Image 1 (spheres, rainbow over the protein chains, first blue to last red):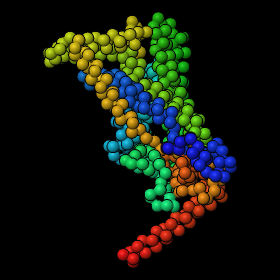
Image 2 (image 1 turned 90 degrees about the vertical axis):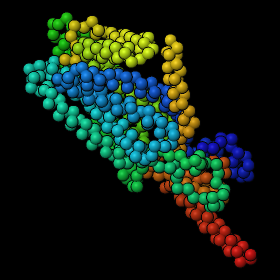
Image 3 (image 1 turned 90 degrees about the horizontal axis):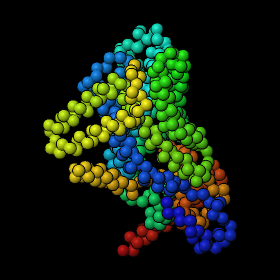
Image 4 (image 1 turned 135 degrees about the vertical axis):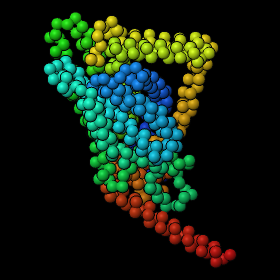
Length: 385
Length: 108
């Protein structure tokens, strides 16, 4: 917005300048600082997350597809988390590209990308809660374990989770729309004498945002969508995981097993990573949702938006860490994974001419993964159970 | 090692290509609060209606005055007067324009 703060309005005008102070007149808020932050976070941080998340999660899926049959409930959950996370990171570059290119892929892409983002967010978070209950039953309720942790139950629960995620995402599918950024503007002197205005400048800028016909619907959906995301997409899984993992740790501490410390460490890592990644973003989202329809200063709003822009990728990072925290931390899974890498390497030797390169990268990747699961790499059995 | 470097360069290039889209980043500028002081009618050039039906979260009238935009509370009396004032002026202008063109066509 070209509302330059030079005060030219006040200097040129006669009786006007004495009567009005700059502070009395409020202009639309351009969120300048947030836009500057977005320019950096948008392409750079998201591409890193996308690449890492793609590598980790597709390796998990490859492992299940070719090497390890899904035999237990845990396997079903891990595979589904990897699928949800992979779909999520794959939609990220498309989302960023469209946001930066005025939604050039059209309004179907707008609805599909926003909608699938929401579906994958919900299913990913709820499946993590399912994994925690699965482990809870296995460790704390060991007697019921065989009956409750069957493969068919696992598939059924995953189906229910995906259906539920789809259901709570319907408002997102329905109300998000691609539209041209312009308000209903009325001028008294025809089209010729408009002041410089970003909102009506050409070429037309498109956004993919909520759009409603009715302001009551607008008000309730604008509260309900982030509200559901907070409640179902964060606080519910947090509560379930908090309960299950606390009970697991209590049980493990009672057990006289030399491996328990390592298992406790894995549990703590899972919980700490979940909280560190998701809590900050969700707290800011909560604050933003609560203060949504009230008047606020441009500076405060800008700060909140910057916080969201910075903390959102931190929450996304969780998708890249899930394969390490849940799948690769298990010894069995790691063995399968090493077989994949070995086979890929052999294939690479056969088909690729610059041999040296492929070897270097695959070895680097294995060693870095080993380092990242360091704490449990010498552990006797897997915590994947 | 040459292949290594080539890949790195390729990766960096793709990042830069993504970054090239940055300039067109655009989001709606919304009124977040209202001006308390009324603006005299003679200063107004036009107005824009902001509703909560799109990405903005409060209803507002955005008055266009020379050099800037001013947010106004649609519930306030001076805002309603301002809108009416712009509408009246617009109607008058249209009449003048119509008369002007009709005079022009008859004279030619």
